Length: 193
Image (cartoon, rainbow, N blue to C red):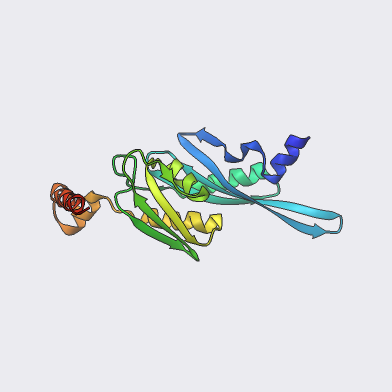
């Protein structure tokens, strides 16, 4: 009975669960309960925010509403699977460069990190990084702490991520030339510091 009550409120142990279906992992980021007062009492509704990814560079988020928690989560998961985007990762573990993103009053700064750093990020952003497959990143959110705005701002930043291959194609140079310039600037920066 108590377990059933916990599930309805979204505060049970299953809240942070990972589920694997067809190679995709989904993470429940937030559940919101709203009440509509009617003649017989209160009628509850639930809204769920879910992030879905394959941990290899594909990620999406979705929002679902229903009278029951499992139905809201299912709707959100389906919406997330329909809205998958591809994110270019360096060495399959971190971002190629530092990037900013915003949505509404929510702003995020994502920074590439050396191996072994781990995911240093707040709750909603952490769920996005874990599902996309990023292992080393430092992130900071400013402004809104609303999970919806934080997730959307993180996705805005990830969409602005460029790979060396796309930058080289845009500039009309070879990838090796571009990366040799990067190594030269890294050596200069380490010599100064």
